[in-house]
Image (cartoon, rainbow over all chains, first blue to last red; front, side, top):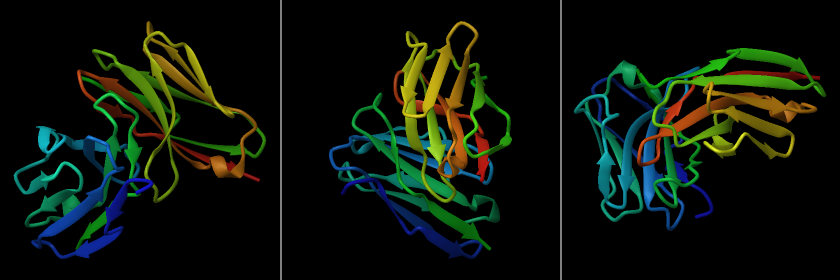
Length: 113
Length: 112
């Protein structure tokens, strides 16, 4: 596609539920990143993929968070047993290479009640 | 600790006026510094990217400067427009791959 696409744009869920957020990067971009942005703050790094592998997952806050990119294109961020503190906008970005310009999606706004 | 500090936190200016946003960083090693514009409810969009050897870079009415010695950068907006109302985020890249340290942003409001 023309840009990075994220779905859903909005997700409201109850505490304890499981959530999946999807990112479809720009075609041909090998690097993919997930960030989390709280209100009034800059994005916070979660995980970086180079191809199919997670090159750096040091930003994932705990083991309830997991992300996959099985075919080196679409990525899914998975959150188990959601907590109210998980409420944020989850941004996905992709780039042609690990040092290239980042292109961000519009984000998925997650609200945990 | 790698940090990016931005000032002011928020700014209100009148349409047509100029403004300058500041960014100080302590990221090491340093690869490049980027300024992004983020409209409310949207993803950040890149304005400029500067490497260590670049002192200034322009993108239309946006001009970014970089002083790698003092670890400071500024973003100057000329002849502001209502559409410039957004958050402006300073981002510093360090390390061997694209791991970015984001500032908290400056929220700019341009009033008619």
